Image 1: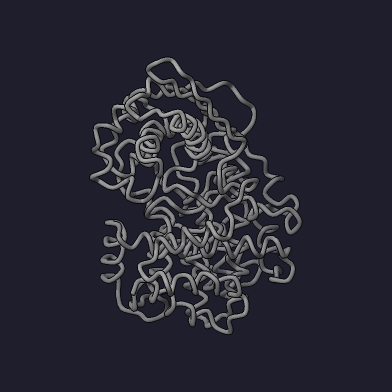
Image 2: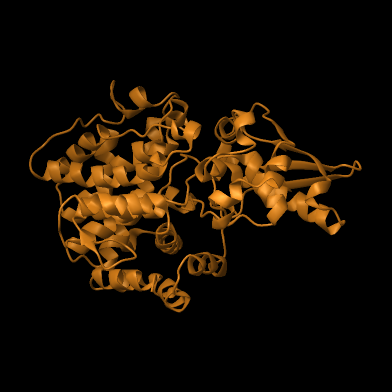
Length: 458
């Protein structure tokens, strides 16, 4: 049996009660985080561009556009809401597969759930299986798609979203496998934005969600796709990945080992690959501050960075010292570390146009250097290690075993609530809504929650 068929068979049979209680809670935490990030993303340029694009694609009232009273078609709603979730790069990341798991899967489940009057339990079950599939697809060839210059979130998210859609649409096993096969031909997402700071990365989850729904719809009407879309001679791994694939890991332990429980919720709105080092910088700098040192006293910042992480957030190093766009700053470990030293925090405003032009931050960023010792362990397992040396020769060390928000160092419920509420203009409604998400499975119709999402902005 192919990997696609095994995934489809498991997904179509999955019920909410079969998901372990602790995983159910984690799934709802990620649901809350995704919606909060979407509300935060409303203020971005890419959100405005996506809204204008959707408005020109035709009128429909099938599904909601989060944060507003506007409605549109199911594929367009999933496209738009996915982009909102990912717009600030504040959304969750499965470090093993380097995929943003919630953006393409939650938006797909929600849009289809609304249009078909599905229950909260239906929607959150489909979302849970989507999380599991996108993580397993990415983790089977860690960093392989990125090594080929492709964004794993779109590559894997397209296929995962097709299964989410098939589950809610009631497709048969064969139709679901065909949907996955079709979705594979929509997989892509170029990483060239790393060299320009352009907005294409923010769009990739939207393409994945929209394409997954389109693939499932095509399959429902008889279109076919290759069942060997994953492991085949011209499947996504042999064609789009630059590293060996562990095909067995895609389906091993389905239902008993949950990758959905191993996704990081970000405390910083920056590339996940920087986080463990940033946490180490925070430890070292807090020690330096306690000793009376100021940012202007920093002589050097030396970090150990996993090679897979360094390729994306440290190289080319000279370009990372003074990023020219907010998105480029989010992918610059030197600049983010310097901003953390200057501001003591990394928040959404840190990566604004005005903020990234600060000479004082760039001056400290230029004092950053790193080494990348060879490692057989994945970047997801890397610890954070930093030495900050002051101009008078004092050395302050920062060491962390895992970044905040990671599976072994999860954010507390209160920290999640604080992050959620901070992104919502209506803090009173936000606090209540956040609490209600943790009983989302009890909703008779997911649509009743959509109006409440709009209220978060009022």
